Length: 151
Image (cartoon, rainbow, N blue to C red):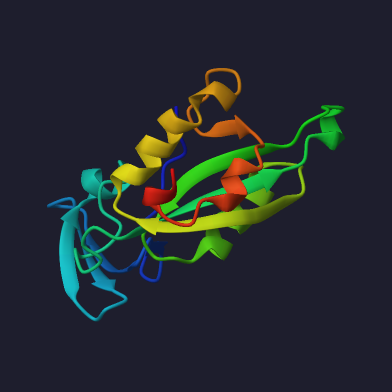
């Protein structure tokens, strides 16, 4: 079972900051980086459905984080392809470094609509590792993509 997240004031979820939590109605009052206040159900936040107030619209950052496989004796590097709406890749990078013993670095970022992450997972499916949905073998092609139209 997954780790239960404690939503306390000041906790960040994408572009949102928790202001207060109402446990009786299971709703959280949040402040977006753009200044808008929003209220979401806890279940929507815990499933990752809400990461902004809607101000970002269809824009999100697709990031490629490269990890070296040398620590495991592997002869290849591998890449995680993920998405964040706030553009703060350093936060995602620090989480990756915390959860893996590997040397992690961002090798590319692409700004595009949310469906681009899913599309890139399919585009690079021939490089997928162990049927995992986010991890891929490193490819030079990942460095050259600048927008969804480059694929």
